[in-house]
Amino acid sequence: MLPIFQSLSRPEAIEQVLAEHIGTIVHIDFIVKTLYGELEPDVLKVVKGRVQSSLTKGRESNKWFSVSGKPGHYTLSLTLLPKNQTKNSSTRAKGKNHKQVS
Image (cartoon, rainbow, N blue to C red; front, side, top):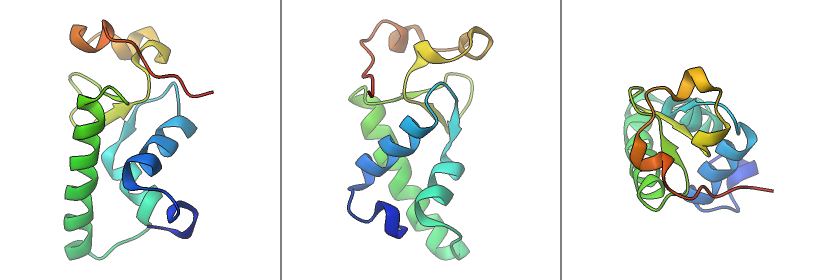
């Protein structure tokens, strides 16, 4: 990871990126580039797989949410997205308590 994120675990770094962009939808490619910078294609494939795994685990534990109808897109809180971006959001995620970052 880039020096700014090296003291954090991957899930903590992902959560920080999502918190910096709270109220928006963030794509996995943006998360990978923010955390790791430019990578060679072979390294990118491995790193992206690891980030995807961390995103899935975080989604399953309700640390953040995937955006229904937008594969590879995540947000820290569905309730903070503009209404037009949450029309297709899953009802399962809407009913859960959302972790807020202060």
